Image 1 (cartoon, one colour):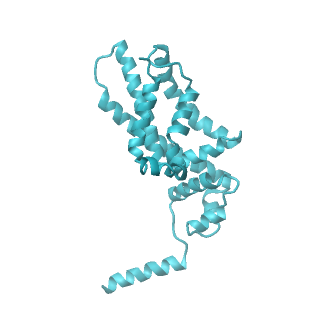
Image 2 (image 1 turned 60 degrees about the horizontal axis):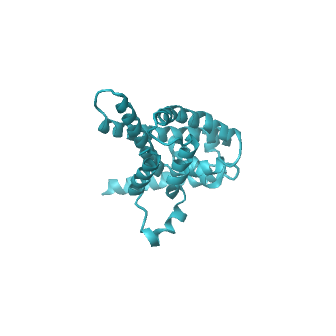
Image 3 (image 1 turned 60 degrees about the vertical axis):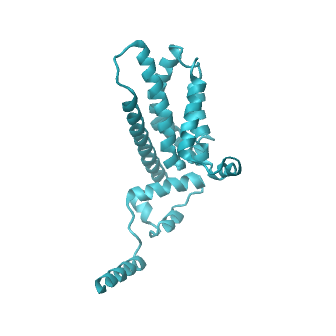
Length: 230
């Protein structure tokens, strides 16, 4: 009992006597949320240090300027986001595919892949709503930050998903809808209840509280039905 009390006392003394130790990933996650909620210009390193219980120069010592912190936070946020998407997508594909190759099967696999990608995107977005909020801000104006996101995030995404969409459009399996339309429908339409949570809650009196997993299933099905040529 005495040992436990001494341990608690030591922890209290350490907390009061020195700033709390934070891992880099923890700082980057907090920075991403701050950039997303406040915007780049308004976000303050001093305020973020205070929020995390760090001394006022800690983040600058670890990451340098606010600009460097921003790009590091973006890299971590989108890297973990797409790792989550890949995991979810591969699991869905593994459960759905496993027959001999035929022309029809290629289309079928592409349709399964598209559905799995949309559903995986929404599942990952639920865990990272700050990325959607940040894109709502950065997408308003041309800037080096937006150019960086387009080059490192959007271009690779379109390279992979765009190939699937083009095959499905060419085969006549889906309507000739633009990639832009599908992207905004998913990333800034279907995802919106996660990023605009206060607005979403206004619908609770009609629909009840949001069930995020059911929402993701429902809108994925709705999008796929709208894309398919019957």
